[in-house]
Amino acid sequence: MSDDDVRLRDVVEADLDLFLAYEHDPEAVRRSRFEPRTREAFMSHWSTRILGDDTVLVQTVTVDGVPAGNLVSWWDGERRFIGYWFGRPYWGRGIGTKALTRFLELEKNRPLYADPFTGNTASIRLLDRHGFQHHDTIHHGADDHTLLVLPAA
Figure 1 (cartoon, rainbow, N blue to C red):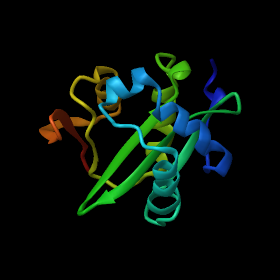
Figure 2 (figure 1 turned 135 degrees about the vertical axis):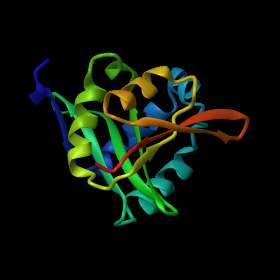
Figure 3 (figure 1 turned 180 degrees about the vertical axis):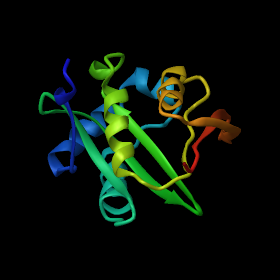
Figure 4 (figure 1 turned 30 degrees about the vertical axis):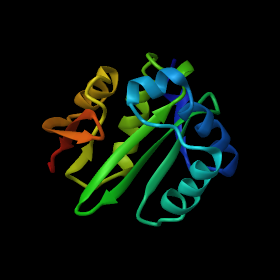
C-alpha cells in the first residue's frame, strides 16, 4: 500500500452510518471498553458535540477512497484529547499509523492527550509510535485506561 492510499478528508453525513456500524463491532467494543450508543444517541453526539463544535478537529480516514474510520481531537477542560475509531477490516495494516501521522500535522496543540483502555495494546502501541508517553492510569467506570501525553516540542 502506498502512502497515497490513506487520506484524510472532512466528514460528510454519509460517513456517519459507517462510523456507527464500526462502533457496534463486538471486537472493537471489547478492545476499547466503549459502550456503543444507540443510533439516535450516536447521531445526536456527532451533530452537536463533534460536527457542531468549531473547537473540534475531525477527519474521515479513507483507504482507496472508502471511509475506514475517523480521527478527532477535542477540549476536555484544559486538556486537548485525541481519539480515533477504525473499522476492523482496516486494523493491522498500517492505516492507523499513516492516518495519525497526517492528523498530527493538522492538530498543532501540544500537549495532546489520549486515554485508551489499558488492555488495548494495539492502540497504546500506535500512540507510542507517535511519541505519546505514559502519564498516568485513570479509571472510566470499572476499567483502567492509560493516560498518554504527546508533550510540547
